[in-house]
Length: 402
Image 1 (tube, rainbow, N blue to C red):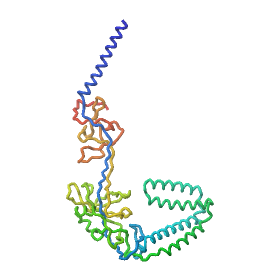
Image 2 (image 1 turned 180 degrees about the vertical axis):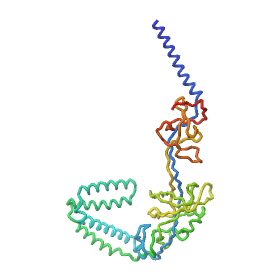
Image 3 (image 1 turned 120 degrees about the horizontal axis):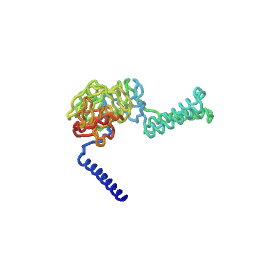
């Protein structure tokens, strides 16, 4: 009797098991829905282009012989009759002059280190902490290949170490070293005298190269450049200009001209942000003019910029990008968007149920087949990994569950 009961129970359980499996298979075969999993999407709207930097420039010429040693960094302001470059008879003389400058800088650092106003009021622990911090900064600059900052920090670190040696008693003073270095400078000066010097003929900003466009491009011609002319300048190879040692311009403002993708936000009078590939600096640009280019969906834009730094004088043509907003959220196919009253949303599959979930659109472009919805943890809104239903749903198919 007990055995018969057991057999009956096992039979009932087997039937239920097969029924459950069968219903699941039937559901999979006959109730499939076209869905797309909600995923994260990043939108960066930067517009890249090759920009031509245009200023009202005048070339500086030198017809003599010799090797030039420039006295100013590119982009520095110089006054009228100040020395732009010294001329030496050989490259070795220029190298010797650089050695003199380096020694003079070292002498200045040693004098600064042993100044009583410096050594009398600084504690060794403070200096030790500063040395450690600057050493870490040097390592960071090295990893980032920022050698300009690295060199500046290295020079400052040398001064701090010299002060530390005096404060801790490792050195009594640097007088003997300063005397020896001064004697070395005087000796080097005898063997490296300039044979000529070149003066600035006006006050302005100096750049130590010329590309041949100085007399062809100016603020007036910027507005008149055609697409073909722009492309020719962008693709041209810079050749040395005979007897030209550099150029001058009166102020730090410039025009930037380029062929860009058409965008309604690039409109006359608008202020935009721009970066170059050679700098992390963000520049403010004002849109001076916009006109159609020959190529479809392209424009010729002229911008003005009032910032002058190393990056903006490195070359005539630079890779640039107009920076717009960056968006991160959930990508929603435009075809899946539905409405409940005024509320925009999508239908999603939760198990066997179909429910409506809201979306909060943070990015929308009429030319795209999707929008970006805010990524949230509110389960009334579309969540990451939800199964978005792409097909049209009738009211009778929708669950009221949340």
